[in-house]
Amino acid sequence: MTEPRDELASRNAPLDDDRIASVIVVDPIDGDREAGGAETARAHDPASLDTLPPAHDSLERIAAEPIGDSGPIPLETVDTIESVAVSATTPGDEDEVPLAEAIAPPVLSSPASIEAELVSPAIEPIAAATPLRRYRSWPFRMASGIGRAIEFSFGGASLIVLLAIATGIPGAQILTLGYLIEVSGRIARTGKVRAGMPGWRKAARIGSLALGTLMCLAPIGYLSSLAEAAELIDPTSTSSRGLRIGQWIVTLMLVPHMLAAWFCGGKLRYFFWPLLAPFQLAIWALQWTLASPALRRGLDRTLGEIWPTLVADLCAVTPLTDFFLPAIIGKHLWQGTLWARLRDGFWEFLAGLRLPYLGWLGLRAFVGSVAWLCLPTLLLIGGTALPDGGAVLTGTTGVVLLAIVCLYLPVLQTHFGAVGKLFAMFDLVEARRQIARSPLRHSIALLLVMVLALPLYLFKIELLDGGIWWALGLIFVAFSLPARWVTGWAYARSSRRETKSWLIWRWPIRMAIFPLAIIFAIFVSVTRFLSWGGALGLFEHHAFLVPAPFTRLF
Image 1 (cartoon, rainbow, N blue to C red):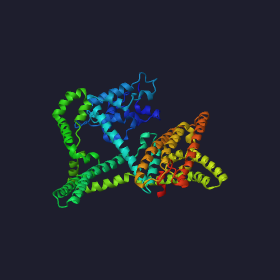
Image 2 (spheres, rainbow, N blue to C red):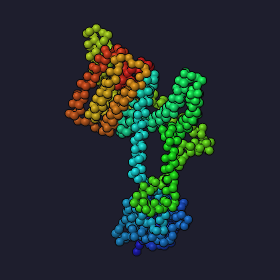
Image 3 (cartoon, rainbow, N blue to C red):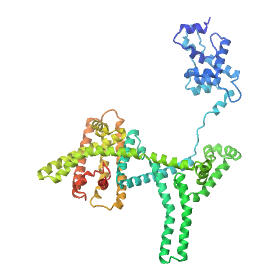
Image 4 (cartoon, rainbow, N blue to C red):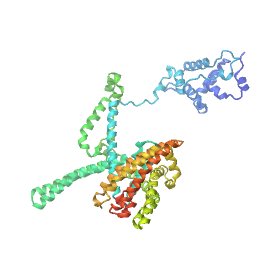
């Protein structure tokens, strides 16, 4: 004779009665239909769902959740759920089978499989509430990928040009150094080389603004030069007056056009929207037509059977206010948000550049690097000013110390970029630990830093005109970025290793890179005889500091 459920539960105290009740809708042991009805009523009470154990929450919600406007689940569905629970929990022999096994719920792979087994046709509308995955066909994905590649290339080129321009502005070189430190630090933190171009989207926006503005101003400047030349020849001639009038007409047409492109974000396509408008509107009208109910049903039954993702992409209509410049301007004029959008967008974009952060990061990196390079550089200068005996001693000592500093300073700068604290610039123990974990990668990074720093020393032979400093900065940035990428990558790989490399592998690599560092230090010491700055030019360590030709501007 079976025992009531309350007595069984009292004998086995660790079992949770609420957990048992949440799984068994009807007691399979005593077959008490009234108890089953009470449990079913509890399952249909939405307020009781908050107290259900999370392990069986999905099963109880299936039995309790209303389906659309049809009300609660029909009794037939509840009987189906009860039958599943009974078949899964009825033991073969009540005297030998433990209670925990007798009342255990069916073991399923996941909550999704529980729902799939218990759901009946009466509650199929639940599946419609699940968000569908957005399909994308390969032609649209390929076109989108090409567009992103073009945007990334343009953004990278704009970023290099902006950094090069910053190297020619007094005091702004610190921003360039801060950006280079941030590049290596991001790669060190994330372990992803693709994180080594932060801000390329904003640089692309600045580049498109500059390029579009220049293209709008070029016709105005051209007509202005023609009008001035005509006025010099004959101020009262018809051609001079016509050119001047044409200049004003073009100015009145292009200046509002340029301001509207600025307002919409400054993307390059906004500067050419009159030329692109016929194609954009034609594509939009085609997609809008295909998305109409009649044509969409026809496409789903024909092409959709073969290529449903293509049909979904063809019928995805983009609002005009997302890409069409007059529609964007008209929307904000209608809503009265034109000035607010312009003001907020400008300040958000300016704050997103993070110029104070980059400046503070670059200044601290500059101070820490100078602290490491000061003593070796002073010894190298002493090799020029002191007598022969002292010059040899101090010069040799300076070369050796500079080589040792070169071994660790790139790692220390990367560590500082990853941590963001000034003490990291002097954490020699951590730098040695990182190198010991991956000596080969750090040696390759150091070799690249030294090799890419050599070409800029050639431009120190003669003082250059200030008008071409930005071109020199372009070379500096183009050669410094790859070195920072590789240094950050080496740091990221070594920081993910918990043990040092073998001694028989570690020491030969470091002993092989040290002579190369000595050669680099000797080359740097010799440049004092070639540079227009003389011995003071030794302080211009552009491999670790700001671009060499502009240090004197601080």
